[in-house]
Length: 198
Image (cartoon, rainbow, N blue to C red; front, side, top):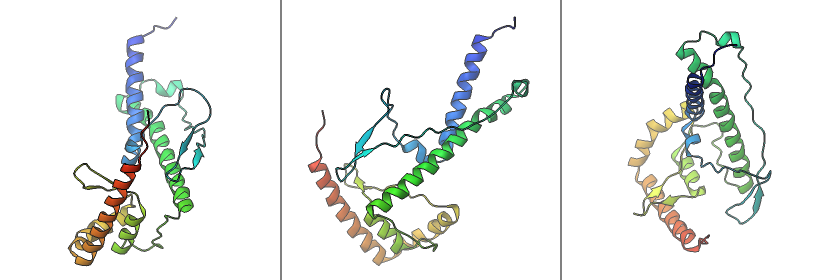
């Protein structure tokens, strides 16, 4: 009979799980901002959208197949063990992000909130049009809590170069101020009309 090392096994399992979830969330910071609500029973779920429509949750099984043979695992260094542990986490993170953007694409098309750059770099007109279409919340001191803006690496570089210049433009500042004031009014209306839930 082979010897059993329960403490070592427990520690290795904890390291594997920690590394796997760390890899999942390292795919994109967006994934760390998604609230998780565990469903412990049942096979269906629904939610009410902003317009009051009831939407069924479309559950889909997601699996990330990995294969490692027992003989390949023997003699792994700690770095190799961590690399193997992170592989399924990275795969799951990429799949979650792909599905998230697919869902967002469908929802924005459904609500008519699509802003298309047509393959061109982001301009300040495009950015302001985008801000006009999204819901913005405000902090207790009345400052906007801007939503995340996700860009590809080339678009991000362009945006980082251009945004400071746009902020110096009085026309941009005026339009942004108008948007913020309107969004603040919308936010206070939403808060005043919000239903209290037990």
